[in-house]
Length: 508
Image (cartoon, rainbow, N blue to C red; front, side, top):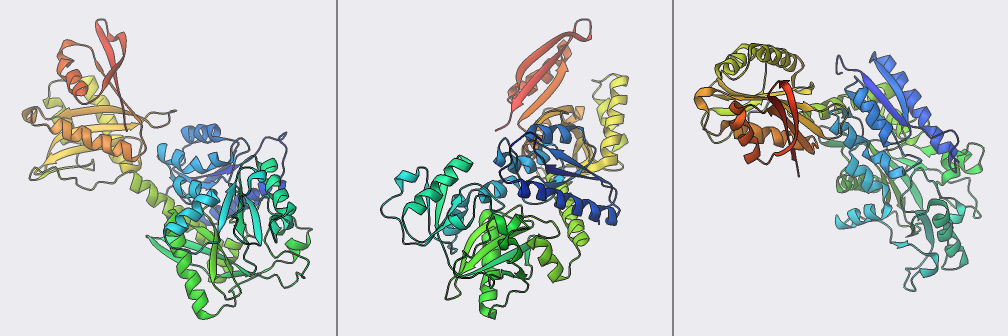
């Protein structure tokens, strides 16, 4: 378990005056929040939970929070549901570790059609489907029924009920498509309905390896011939409904060994196809010959105590607090990965590499800095404070401090970090090269390496501030030759006659 880290639990909430078509699913996130916070308390991990209504509030909380780890329970926003998928990217921009899958996987799996495309491209079985923007334009060559009509981009079974299943191309099919258009304002997907057994498969990833939890089957035995055997909105959320009360899970699913093996293999392949590398759920239907078809992949599944994922954990013998602890550990690993810990980067010169500063680097780096005869004593003292903090906090701290060394001797130092209250903007605070080696291109090597690291953190804009004095002419020329543009001048900023010059460079 990671020591010394606190956790920010982020979850979605809606304005109190906003109409709620699916109030039950929106309130369900609070069950997740309570369960996660309870587990964090049991684990002794400091935490706090914050509800957010939109991406602006996410950014505001990340900008001001001290927590380095975000437990991401944001599932959708009222303003724009898909905006919630951007939370991992914001965490990356603000150099926070986050739980769950990345933005790309969440965006892809939110779109049912794009998910099918990814599955088919990888040769994985999924029912036929068609996207319809206008109910009156259902093509004549529509594949044979029965059909199930779903919203293209929605989760939690929103928009799916008994009326969604239609046996043939008739008025009921047109009506089902029109309901989706009216209710969600986007396209409907007509999918071939597989009238068979339904499976939910929970998958956990660790160290680039996937573990499939015990397979779960939905028991429809209480449904007579008049009822459609689907897990629609009522079955998931409306506790007083017949569907909710009569769709229990059976774990493990009573399947022939060969079918169970095939489902497990397909689950892992499906996760890989859409880029899931954390916890997720894959939903299947089996036809009358027990052939599996992948329906959907949920990259951000419900993990509340009553949901299928928690049930699969229990069947595996994994306590919920253990699962939360594993999520935190993966988030911390992700934070360290994106902070690019000190792995030597060779540059073709024997014995030369670039690495993060560490204990023992403080005095040699400051001696190199003083040896340039370029900085005032007060500036060197500021550098001492910055360097000491960078060494103390390492790659996960605010200051990213790197040295270029050759045969064990420090010949260059650069320090950069994200600009507070911005998205993807970084400042380069210090760049200095040993005076005896200037002209060898070491400054360019150090700068280029840092720009690459900034880009890996989804940085988009780099800021450099320097002096307008004549002795800084070579410094300004150095940045201009490397793609930095003069952006602003603050007259007499440092002293009378000493302007501050601001250079900027946008990264591709």
